[in-house]
Length: 113
Image 1 (spheres, helix red, strand yellow):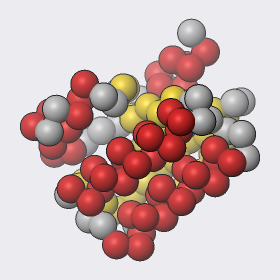
Image 2 (cartoon, helix red, strand yellow):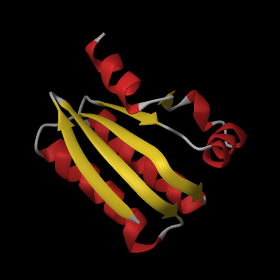
Image 3 (cartoon, helix red, strand yellow):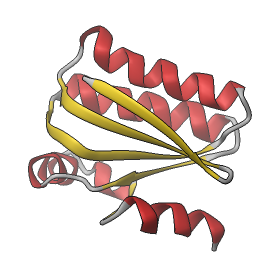
Image 4 (cartoon, helix red, strand yellow):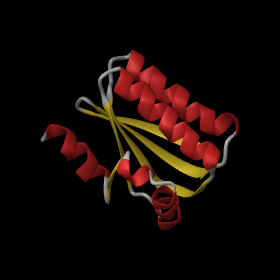
């Protein structure tokens, strides 16, 4: 899994590519989020456009990231969620917890509202 980081104003965008199937790569996402929060970047968009599949470990990483961000007073938004991942979020009822957007631009713009 690859993680690309981009800062847009006061919003950090993490673009992920690969599968979120657990292991060190998936854990690296949460570590990156914690690093951003410690650098006082608390508004984060995770771009899942390059993630084709995710299992329960991947969902756990997203939940852990959300918890870390919210405890710091920030917000997490998901962008470009693939159909398979979207259906997983719906089945697990996590769509009620995560804010999702069609594009990264819309997610970033939502922080400014």
